[in-house]
Length: 281
Image 1 (cartoon, one colour):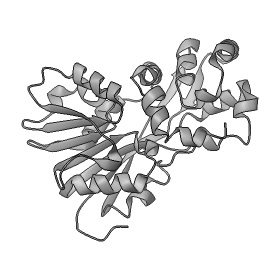
Image 2 (tube, helix red, strand yellow; image 1 turned 90 degrees about the horizontal axis):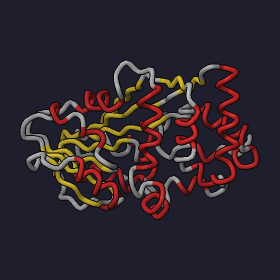
Image 3 (tube, helix red, strand yellow; image 1 turned 90 degrees about the vertical axis):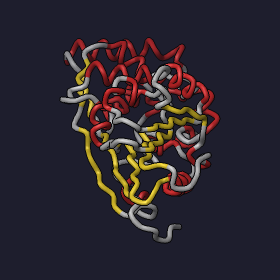
């Protein structure tokens, strides 16, 4: 467990295992999709906050398989050009395959946010959806994002808070106490979260707004929870072959006793503006 904090920012692990393709993301997204209590789905909510306008030049870093755009092509204003990047070639390939036939509206590129292969002041908007906490040198990544933004441009950066899915952490600690027991939770803290995000963005951006997404999960099935928990970075510390059944038995009994498991969500985003030309670190 002692190496779990570094796994969140280990490029080789993230690119070669956790995010080599979208399978782990799919398991997690399915839990949110099926059991969310939100009045509007996450991607629709994020699109609302982007405030897209005609002829905008947009960059998404850590775009994964392009989920933000797949079901919202009708919401993209005329003339918008959207560049999707990810440091995982597998993710970029999936995004490109899913968005074929969009008349050149999208471009795709394998790229690391710490070294963006784009010109200064090229984009009006940069989107970072739940990915900045994976960046080993966050200041370098934010400096690059600011560099490629035009004056007046914006960064929209989504992340989670400390209480996000806390009940799943508690379940892990009960079922796997030797690995995830009390006092062994430091891995769960994010390098860029709702609590510290404004502070981390402040040296690089002039004006920062924060928005919180109102949601929770009410789960009444075992298998989606098992799939979610064994898709996470934390699950790398657990021998899945020996412990899936142990977790399944625990969840089955808990649902028999309680009927439903309530799971807290703490997630949202920051909108950071590049207004002026002030010195940065």
